[in-house]
Structure formats: C-alpha cells, structure tokens
Length: 183
Image (tube, rainbow, N blue to C red):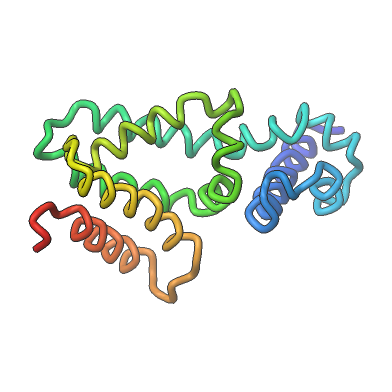
C-alpha cells in the first residue's frame, strides 16, 4: 500500500469516526461501524489506529491544543481583561471545532476520564474562573456555567445564520449573561 493511500485511508477513518461519534456518541459507535462507513475491514482500521480511543485522541488533539493555547493566553491576563478574552476565545474555539464539541458533549463525563484528555478538566475549571472574571460570587459562577454549556449547544445546531453573525450573537449574549450589573 502506498504512503498516500495509507494517509488517505487514515483521513477517511478520522472523517467517518467524527461523523459517527457526533451522530451516535463515542460509546454508541463501534470500530466495525467506522470500518463499514469507510468501506474497509476492522483489521484494516486497526492497521491505522490502535483502537477507538486512539481515533478519538487524534480527532480531538487539535481542539485540545487550541484549548491549551487559550488557557495559556487567559492565564496571562489581569482580572479586568480576562472575562472578555475568555468569552471571545471560548466562542471562537467552539465555532472552530463544532464537530469535535458535538462528539465531546454527548459523552463528556466518560471522555474526561481518558488519559488523552487528562488536562481538559483543569483547563475547563480555569476557563470557568476566567468567565467569572475570577469572582467567587455564586451568581457569577452560575452565569459562567450557563455560557460554558450554552455556547456549545448553540454551535451544534444550525441557527440559519452565517458564522460571523453567529459569533457576534454568541459573544454579545455571553457578555450580557456574565455582566455582574445585569445591564
């Protein structure tokens, strides 16, 4: 098998797995389902990947890397700037990785226990802190949780508007939800 064919098959496997994981969840998708969608045998699939966890880890690696970059950027900001940067950065992250977020959202508690995602919970906790403006107020935390849960849902479902308009609407809505003055 030529290198380009192997690379093409690997990409086909990732694409099929991404679609299936988004539609039926990680748990609800078998290796045989992925192989069938690609049109290859399960053995051929296992030639390219060690298993379903390896496929998932490779699929989500760019999103996790982008989340790490956002986490580092937010850590360097003062309390005044962190909330707005967290809102914009989180909206951009979710919009860029819509399918990956859809995959994560359905099986999140289980997936966060996997070694490939060991740091994601801690980064999520820091993002939550940034969304509160580093406030300990329960109302600020509730609003941040609303944003953390709502932005991905808004990106998973087609809203009938373009990405630029969607981003603008999400940033405005999140900023309003997080506004401690209620203005």
